[in-house]
Amino acid sequence: MEHFGDKCKEDISHISSFILLLFRQLTALTQLTTLHLRNTQRNLNNIPPQLDMLTQLADVDLSQNELTRVPEAFYRLASLKRLNLSSNCITELASVIGMLLLLLLFCFLGGEKENVGYLLFS
Image (tube, rainbow, N blue to C red; front, side, top):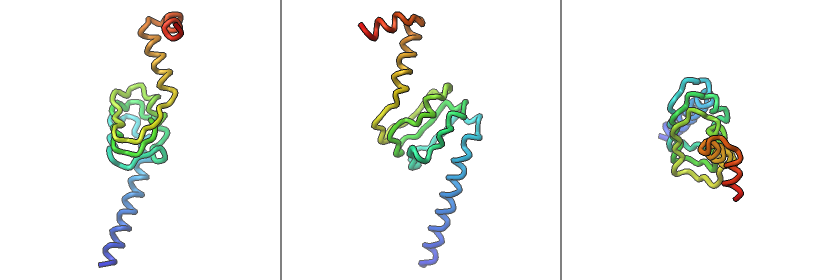
């Protein structure tokens, strides 16, 4: 029976290695539109930083993982419509958020820099 347990551990190790290899090759799937990795023990060390190469990516679910911040690549995905990061350990948001808010404000005010400055500093 002990041999069976060792065999299972070995099989799980091979499966984990295979999944890791597939995950590293993920960025080659340039037409991918949906990526759901809910509850898969993802953290900043095991998410490829090149995910922004997936230019068609519109729907991402990374909920119930171990992320402490939003991976930088997601800020650069222009096609992203839905990003679920619920039930993670996010404690910080990148300064890019502030820049995005300024850009939205800039667009909302018709692209007039003077109006943005007036709202921010008055």
